[in-house]
Image (cartoon, rainbow, N blue to C red):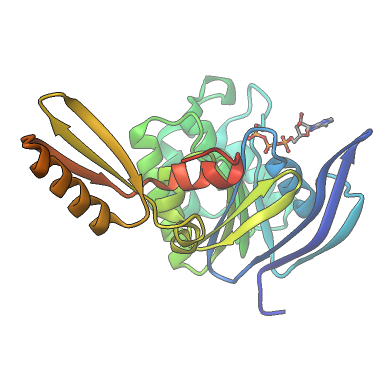
Length: 271
Ligand code: ATP
């Protein structure tokens, strides 16, 4: 198999409720792939079934490479120190602790602190470092920057890009559209238990149609016009206002954000 991960017809029930109704996805080697979906869509469930942490009810999963996992919510003992945790996991995996990872993640800055005293950002870094022990080829990251401040996000993004440059494949769940737009090569949108879109961000934009909004401001106020043909709408409106003798104070156009495109697919919301 040349792909890093292939999932076919994955199903998962919690009691009477079927959360995953036949999920299909394909992650290529070396790409950053985002799994998106509204709250409760089943992203964590899908990731945990793929990771083998949660039993599935049906479907096939083929993972091609060593795996590293950063869970959405994980916790260690309150008194363990970062270097001890890294040493412990390295021992489980039969590896020597990797100083390069510890350094790249800035763990030495808080290596002697107790786990309970670490900040959210420090904990995220530590959990990413733990996922990297054993030099995984495929990394699963569940909301890797949730709860981080701007600087924490920026440095984690830089690190994720670095890991991609090293050839690692990453599958991440995220709610942060700016993050997805910055980092991800391809995305999948989970809705009603199935993947309703898989492709690049450009393909997503094309799939929802190239929609534009034109805002025209006159002395009477700001008026909004939604259109798929920007040039035609602008020239039509200009002619209309000229005929009416209305002075135009400002014209702005907006192509829509990834977030709006995502919402239109994930929630069926009108744009
Ligand atoms: P979020 O974006 O909020 O993290 P998600 O897309 O990751 O959500 P999941 O956490 O996978 O969604 O949950 C999918 C659905 O399954 C939700 O309705 C959730 O309440 C339900 N669910 C998750 N875990 C369990 C469980 N252990 N037992 C029963 N229901 C569960």
